Image (cartoon, rainbow, N blue to C red; front, top):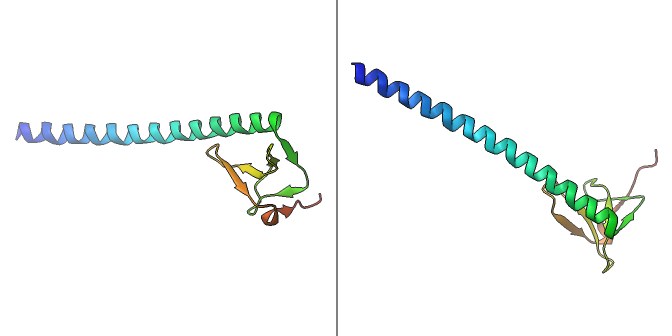
Length: 94
């Protein structure tokens, strides 16, 4: 009976540890994505031209023009996503 209670307690502690570890991994991934996004956007703003008055196909902003005259935006994970000029939309006037 005593061994059974210890076994249950050990399983509960393992479950708590796995849950906490998953939450830490999730938070770390979010921080990693935001950091990558900030770095790529910062570099893009310095190196490439910002295409004013345009947004991406799904409202992404800002749009950059690289040295090969290709249009792109930076996604939430810090990746450059190239888009044809025809898919860009006019930015709403405020």
